[in-house]
Length: 91
Image 1 (cartoon, helix red, strand yellow):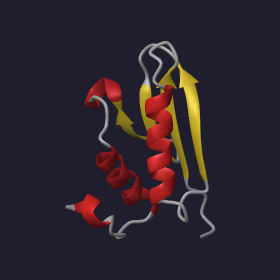
Image 2: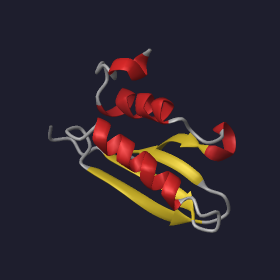
Image 3: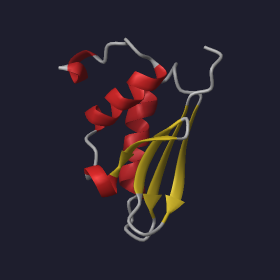
């Protein structure tokens, strides 16, 4: 795959959400180990928890609450590997 596929998880340092962001990052890297070329954690403030794929916001805690990993995996999959099965996560 030659296309760059980036995921960024921006999390609030004031809220101490690094463990949650790191866990989600691990889930995504494990699921999309061949599709993703980069995954970054971006420290933020003010209660931010946003997941972006190639600079497109796919999840914002302020609008959608905290994400379940399966929901984020589906959103990432739809952008980096459309048509790919996620196995039991697709059910």
